[in-house]
Length: 295
Image (cartoon, rainbow, N blue to C red; front, side):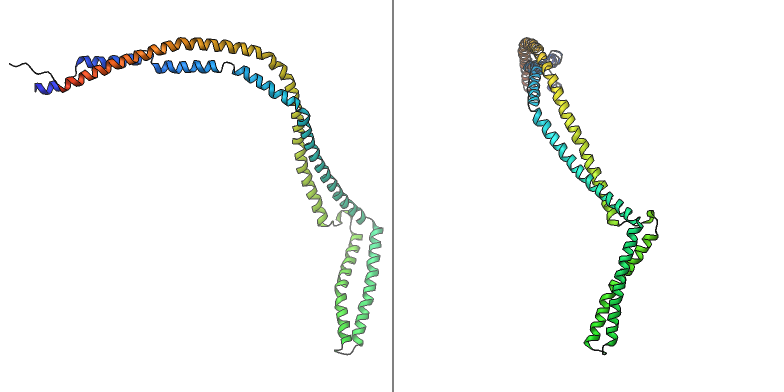
């Protein structure tokens, strides 16, 4: 029983050494924390002139914008002129379509023109009736089944569609003369042309507004750039002075922290060596446990 108890015994020196290493590693400033702070100081020193450099680059960019102003504004104005040209063309087409409808209504409301149309259609109808009568006479006079009779019948069939069309046109003209101006029919294709023109004009005008804004924005940007350039140039010396101060402070703090970092690393290595030595002694003791005294 004594041998069993001694084999699981942990030397007090090993336990105390392990706890001492853990306590020292957690309570003292570890090298990892100091390394992170050191890296931050180095990065701060490296970027100390960042604001000054950004200001300088902004001056370069703004000066280039001002130099390119004629080209930039010219391109925007050319794009605006193009969309306006398209919109004006569509507007002219729409006005023409609307005028065609107005002319159509005006013509329909002119009784003299409608009466002239009726007279012309009546004249054509009279002439056509004469041709129909002649074809009928020729058919009746021809021998049954003869080529002459067949030709007369064919002529009659040829005139039949013309007769129907003229009758319909004459009736429409007479109805037009009797109808009120608001009741005058307008061809569907003319109405559709106006609707299409209105839609196309809206779409074209929707492009004009953004193009106008682009020109205004370009001009405003150039004006702002001309104001910002001297302001930035005046601030650069101050930003450089602040950067130099930040760089010096960061470098000074980094030098001091570097010494602390080296000391912390050495302390940690010392504690690790003590811990490893204690662990090795404990392992040796467990392999060769002390023999109980002979009685």
